[in-house]
Length: 318
Figure (cartoon, rainbow, N blue to C red):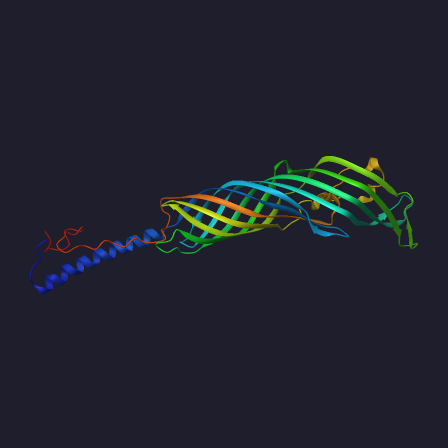
């Protein structure tokens, strides 16, 4: 490269060099800010629980859950993204209670007399297995990583729509004894006549449940495995926002004899049911070609004497 010795010509050529550098830097910045994404596969394991409320009890049961799925994370910038996907989940829940009491109010006998039925179950046990297809819609926030660091932090929050496969829950239940007492408010009378005491009952059935929505929160570490591969490791907590058995409640007024004890399950006679889960998840992601980089590479400076890449705009280059 030969420069004219005139000062004005030198200034013009330096301006061309500076413009070239600015164009390169601007192009790199715009490229780094383009929308991007991560394809992911993930799995999880943890505890699952059934929160139920009856007249005498408000408690969580215990159990385990397994999860497997895939998804896509769309990045708006290097820290904010939205995650959607599909997930298969299996909830295995067991419940035990020494004593459960419930109230069925406003019943009427064959003589038209109004009464309230108080039912007590002794040594109750129940095991549920529910399989769901879940659709998570989550907002993701993550920290910026330093140029020499492969570790960052992330947080996910949002909802999961759970659709039970076959819309049923398989369960086993057993009760050592069931005791009914009726109260007639018009007569201020307590009686067991016609209701009484029933001995043990064991059964295996399927119970209809509806789709349910869960609020979910996940937090953990994001590790860079290679240039385009990341590993997420975190803990999650899910909590049901609606009752999946609200449309299938049954009255305990029929539970007065061994032959009339069908569908004996918490999902049927509890006042309210919520499903909850917590555990750990691992997610492996593969970035798309336009994924924003944590560290934008610095543009290479044009060394003195090098031929510029833009030709025809400065008459003093050749």
